[in-house]
Length: 122
Image (cartoon, rainbow, N blue to C red; front, side):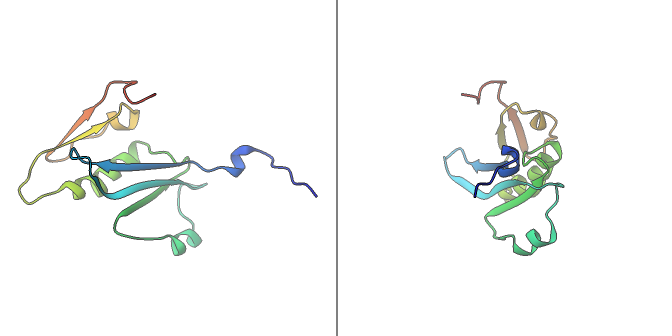
């Protein structure tokens, strides 16, 4: 008996992993993961069984890729709380020139630095 897959797309999933690495070359928690979900929302079964922990931030989109809305959410919910300090030090957030990064509004005490196009591609 043989089975035939109708399309490769129906057997693969896209996801985005976005680590934060400090200038001291230290991985900063939490790790952000964006999963692909058909409607861009976690269904009830996924929400019930989704592994939740302090060092992992999970969200989803239809494509599994991060857009402008997800970047804004990540900046506010993940990055700023992760680097917030009692002494209000300024921090730099260095990003590639992906379109979703270009429209980010700078958060308090955060300077966004965009790398030139092509600087992060091999």
